[in-house]
Length: 310
Image (cartoon, rainbow, N blue to C red; front, side, top):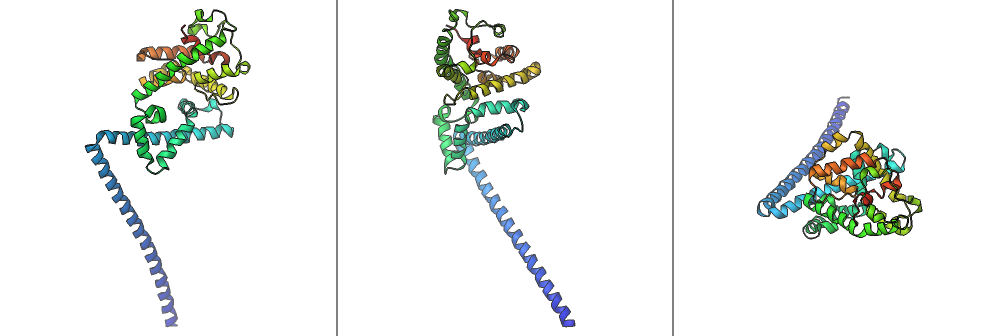
């Protein structure tokens, strides 16, 4: 009897000790992994400090590339989340907040490039150095806004707005002149003239493929998208953004810094070249006052009608 109890105690003790050893081994492995991670982190920090001290320019590009990759990834995640909610009818565009509408608008026009950059940055071996080299030599051609400095962003935006005015505006004028004689002498229109404009503007569904092409280029919609769906969606989102901002215009405009003002004018294709902050704010104010309730067929032409000079 005594031996039986003793054997049971011994067996229990053996199992307990084995379990203790098992947990101890797991804890030891975790500590070793943590120690290894801390060692790697310490080594990485030393390398960063070396480059920050000895090669500050290279280090600044490295920091920008890491920050740009994270920002690009964040916007891409939000975009696909919003897109999923729209497709599943969980939400509509009118449910989106102003920041969500801005992310959707900007990401939608660059999604292919953004996904490619994320693949290069996080999947391709030595991808991050490739991104850094691109930032140095061809930032505006290959990369997206997430990797640009404020100066580069302004340069890209103004170059694109100028190209639209030089290339697309004359073609749009030629097309509209078929139904509107002497249109060039009436342009540019004042903002208050837009709601009651006498310019004969066709509905989007009635436009020819050539007319659609130049309007898509004006609003940075892919010219390869079929029909009017993509263009209509962009106009819908822009007008929703206008209305949300117009609800409390004074608060919304006062909260914008210079770079944010530039962004809001750029996505509406309003050229802010040589404007100071006050002038940009005034231009955006007029746009919100007069354009948020325009018919889509007028809204899509609005940047042309108020800026075209011939």
